[in-house]
Length: 141
Image (cartoon, rainbow, N blue to C red; front, side, top):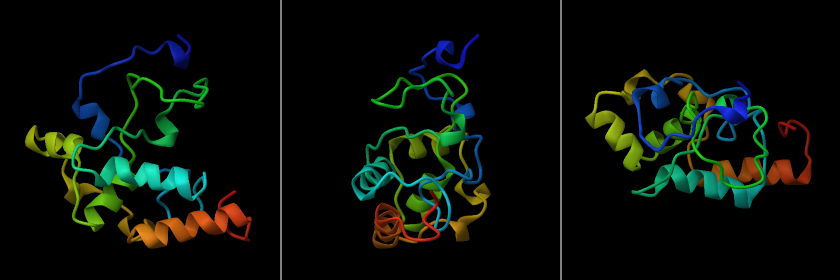
């Protein structure tokens, strides 16, 4: 079955919370990671910081044949971005899916790893993205 053919799921599950550390492409990393610019990065952060929030998958779990040009349905096997979860925890925020995961015993923020690799706040995160937009050395491109 091609990745794009994995079933779309609308029901939250424990499987969504299995990623415990940021992947190498995580946009929330201080160093490395993918950089999509400040505007997109602010959107990513909002998914984790807004009380309702949204699901934002780990880059490593997105189907390889997903066009990524628009909002995609959540696919079976995808995981939430651990970097985003760490970022929100550092700011004392939890969106609806994180609160649901805790309530159902699926998510334990204390088990998240590599916290030090993730930006401490929005200003730092946007500065890392700004550096990337300018193409400076070490920008993660």
